[in-house]
Image (cartoon, rainbow, N blue to C red; front, side, top):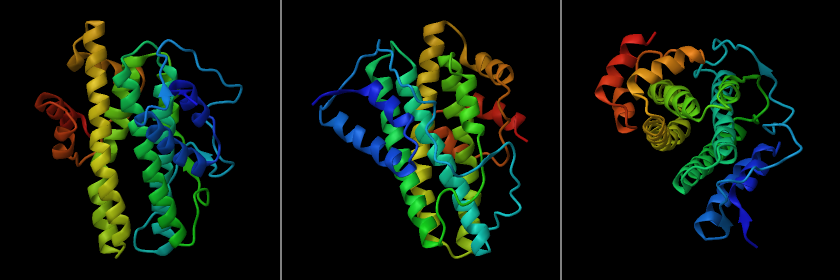
Length: 268
């Protein structure tokens, strides 16, 4: 039976079980590639359930301290891995929301963000399995909700969503990953380093997708991306980048030399 992509994305978005969501995103992409999924860019997907679907745990906090996330103690390392898993779980939701929310776009847009959702699902599964090896599960630690909050703020502004979720918030992961890998390597957790290698490779592609569709939106809307981007950051109160920036990864993800210079100048 042929199913419709954007409606299926919404149904996965409201799914509350993380394992079902992660596996479902990967299965939906396989089905799409096999020709078992149709696309109606003009559809208005409907669900009676609130967005996004989440498990009862982790408890979401406005702010968290990173002091308890030392890579050099078993509990701290588990807390650190949990924080990364939570980011990947949220990233599944962000990608699925892009597919279901924004109507009337080229089919390549929906294919791109379905790919992102599937890859984020794999990342979550890898981290969850490694957490279990530490005797922990997703939900055992508190977490924050910053990624989804930006998703809600930009729900009615496609250009802002592309500017501020993938190429701002997710791009921060490109900067944070190498220092994390160094700490985890020093702590002897080679499996975590390997998982982060996979995540970094894929996230470069995800940020590149964000860059591509942000520039597409700027061209459609007749605005200059280099002046529009800082204006959107200010309007939606996006966080500033943190040093050190991973300039090489950001360049691979499509940031221009001028953009990298501007980001480096404003980084904290």
